[in-house]
Length: 319
Image 1 (tube, rainbow, N blue to C red):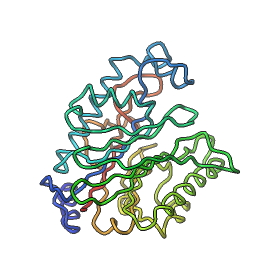
Image 2: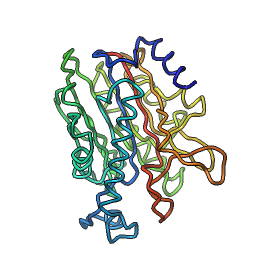
Image 3: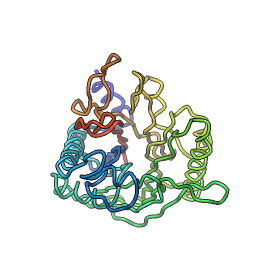
Image 4: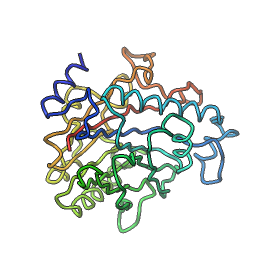
């Protein structure tokens, strides 16, 4: 039923998901939850924890098992929507080497993805990153923006802005990947950090003017949160209808929350659709509540072999 509904929605905006149309773009975002390599490089507590001799016993074998699952998911999404993602945004990536291993050790090596990644000042040592297919785009520029409070940069993830030129149309698209500060330490006390991140995002988008803007990320807040109001005059939140329908990307105490989303400029809004793909092998049965939840890599300290506590999201739009 959900598949049928999606097909109807896409048809309504002129998108054909059953064919690899040259005039259609598929974008994916996924928070990969602590995607570290297995070596301790002395860069912090999380780096040591996710190593072969750390508390998590994060081994080479477990790392490559996760790589295989991520690759499998990307190809599954390609089957669902009729084409591989042209652009993929990631959150919670330790370093560039993690993505190089992902792209070289799996079938993704045949897909022509180029990696864009920079280390940030995040306390946990995790960053955002972007992959794009070189058969679809030329890379024009990359910039970073760190949220600030009282003139000081927060020790959190940078926002990654990449300008790409479409090889078929010469149209320029501005992709921004975000991972806003979490509610660690309490929702109220952490609001100023998320407001700072949203302010930085607004300033970044304002500077781009009337261009094709696609923002993706883990915002650590639902679409109805007040801080999204400051973006109303420049971006449209594509997750509103999914949120209203009770859909989500993370699950806590038997309840779904939608915190991973896409926001787009008005020149893309009318011919785009956001979706949360059905990927059965990413799910597991709830033990204390009815239904399913994402299968994580760890349950507490215990390794259970999943990928993430987040589900991936996609945006499909016509050029």
